[in-house]
Image (cartoon, rainbow, N blue to C red; front, top):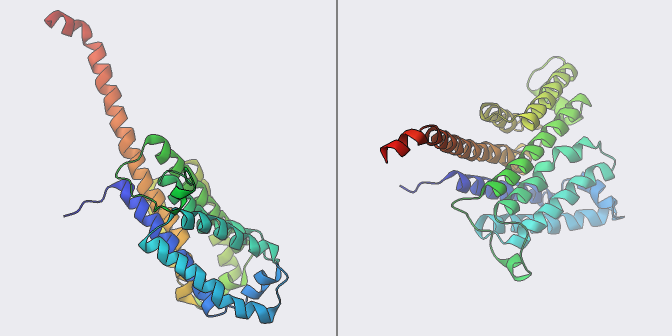
Length: 281
């Protein structure tokens, strides 16, 4: 049976998450989601032209998502970082609250973590068009960098979503109403505070059991959008992937920490017993 190590788990998690995120995002272009007109208007594009451009933009997103899934070219991963940042930034630029941008850190932070895991952007122009490699092992520095990026991504996406709850975003209130909560505004306040506190825990001291709970929470809570449920859930794969990849990365960090702990302990024992060993020699 083929055994997948921790580093490979992180790679595949980030890669699949990136692919699904942009496939889900592109699907909204295909079905011409009306709110996209607001984002096109940032560039001075009118509503009529926006609806014509949506399927084209959506098709490109889906194509890039499939490329990441099948043959992850480094240039495509880099573009997803840039494009994910731009599309997230269009939210506040079009008049939406700034937490809408923060909540979408997974859209560009997840492909960024994948780039770092595979050795960075590119050494030269030619390597831009090579696939990101699956490493069987990664050095301490790379693992630390990936873990740090993922911690900030998870922190911001929970802070952003928590703030949207505190601001009583309509679509979130609609979710709570659909779930049967009598006072959705109070529910939003409680959920918002919970998510912000959870985000602080991840930033200060990320514990794997806490991350697992938050992963289940995020995957479950994103299932209840009143409209386009499946596409909304798929689009947020960058968020789920960042949480799960961090969970795997912390497993590798813990394993390395235990390894170096026992090595230091072994060295200490040898040092303390050196006089006795010299006598034996």
